[in-house]
Image 1 (cartoon, rainbow, N blue to C red):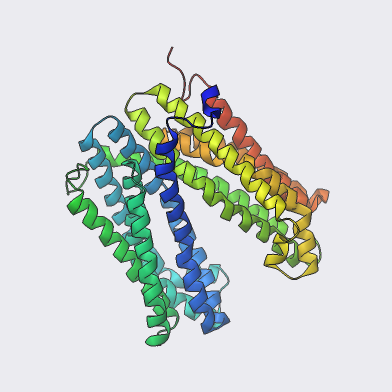
Image 2 (cartoon, one colour):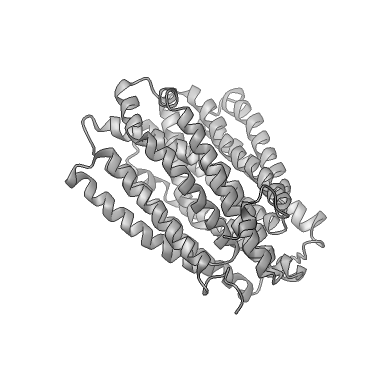
Length: 446
């Protein structure tokens, strides 16, 4: 890391802030849609609320394979923008949108056709299954819109614009906020009303992005309607494969960690509740660092595309320093909240005590996690998808092997968090090696 990266201010800070601050707003606004649905549906009773929870899990699994629509699009468009090739940026944008529409139609067809078997596999039955089936089959109609919105985020980020996606995200949330009470209670549609409100909100977002990309911004972004050539789509599919490996690896660790936590102690609910509280706090705080990761994807892609390796390295190092500083600040905040924070989530003394038993794993792990998230953004922006896939897979295998030993060796909930810490440590080591490697995308020219 260069000494300049540790300066109080650098020439890259303004560009980083211009991308990261609106991106943080969009990241925070996204969960609000789910919170609004939960708040309104919760008034319909526990079956309705349970149906919403099951449905959220189904849609989370259905869409996680399409994360590349944001990551790969940002990287490819930013590289073209940096190279001054507006037409290439436009072709990548069209390829992303076409992939989004095709993928969304596929998701809709699968969810509508297989709703019953999916709910059976998740153990949902009775009234809960009836409500969930209604919600899933309606909300599945928004799948193409959801993926178009994701592509829109990636396209605008690639053009170094995170303000427009923030405005669209706020619009989506506004539509949902208005329609939820009107359809759920005003028209008496219940859970179906919540689903239709989300469908309408997502399609408003998709049409909004379509209007911008196909109308007011079309010429500036080099977008020409029509089916993209196979050569333009191929990079998205290749990146999608690698990002899917990375995402599945991380999801596997977190799923196994939760499964192990559910089997620790008596009652097991105490351990898994404590684990879930700590994990959700960690995920929420990760939003602040994700904003820097988004800035990294856009800026690194642009500088790489412009053929400026020196600026690429400077931005990468500055972002790593900022990520570490943010991680330390969050750790200090969580440490200061230690006397109160566990009690904000539960009044059960046993659960509070269990949270305190793993609390310092959360505190000490935040700077490490922050560095991992920012470096993820750096290498995603550099298009180093294959390395990220293999490095994450390797670290995940080690973490899962440690998790497999937690119950036989009686390591308890602390063992679960040691295993998660091993995942983060493994990723920091591999990413730091890649940063220094002469074979990596941030290497110095010979």
